[in-house]
Length: 434
Ligand code: C2E
Ligand code: CA
Ligand code: CA
Image (cartoon, rainbow, N blue to C red; front, side, top):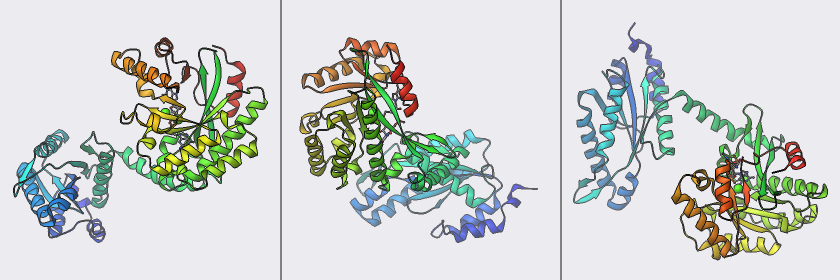
């Protein structure tokens, strides 16, 4: 039986109803797709078309598209066809291919077109694109599904600038589903007590003592196990849940620290990660003051970590909040130091107390001379203006030696301890010895 028989009319009708394909090419697409046994579906998205529309007008954009489509069609030859898909996306089908590498070489030829500027009506334009591809019927013998798989691949491509084309892989589908499910599940996570805090020790290698802890959020997901915040922080920042989650983090970590102080670890500090949305929450400062009072915690033991990115983009309001937090007696550290633009003026613009040198510097410090010199100078610069310096992500003894030789004695990293649960932390503090 020919594969085309598996492309049921129902599928085509369903697809048609979904209204995905637009303009005059519509009929042609279905007729064309019906006749073919196997083909590659390519969705090509032009990222910066809007820019040229705003610059030179709608008519210009139409002309530009016509020209681009002509060039692509010439490049496809008899191997493919081009249709208009929604918005600034074109749908290309490739057929009669010997293997996938033939498809790849055609895709690379298409990509190459966009490496050069295009002149239209005396204006030079340089378009950037992303491509997602799937294979019919290999990925799905339901046309609608195969096209949506190409869309998923396109989405993957969008998220990662380095890849200008992606072929669909089943893992991408599961990631999309997982992401969607996480968004729904997290709404209930606080109520179900699924969010917990882990603590990572910070060591002073001069005194050989644990001097502090960083509170790191974990989601004890019933299906996926212990989920790292990198998978959900962005989601909860977008939907503003971070304000409630952030309050939970503050409450839990204050209470844990107080308990540890009472148990005899009286000088321990706690570092808490704070996101931008929390800083713009009008109730945030009062909440912090209220919790300090309730738990009877001296604010000098609390460090708020704010990423370099937030400070770079900060507004007057954020500056005011940071000043108020400092007036309450808390300390402020710049997290991920060195990863943003190297605008150093926020070191004095905000009266911060310390910096955390990002793991990306530490990773190579023992074998990359340039990184060592940069790190060395960051440490010196910070100390010269009385800032504390913590190195994070220290994993091996060679990295530790480099930091020690350059006068950086506050260390956080797997070399001493991973983030751990409260019971693991108690054992760690009890047994710690360098
Ligand atoms: P971060 O603030 O830069 O935290 C350090 C991250 O590096 C942690 O990842 C930690 O487990 C990891 N790490 C520490 N030492 C090492 C090491 O030696 N090797 C390696 N490979 N990794 C190391 P984690 O816990 O997955 O947290 C990821 C990020 O999520 C944090 O990065 C922070 O930006 C964010 N985050 C965590 N908890 C919270 C929270 O309560 N609120 C907010 N807003 N963000 C949080
Ligand atoms: Ca941090
Ligand atoms: Ca960091």
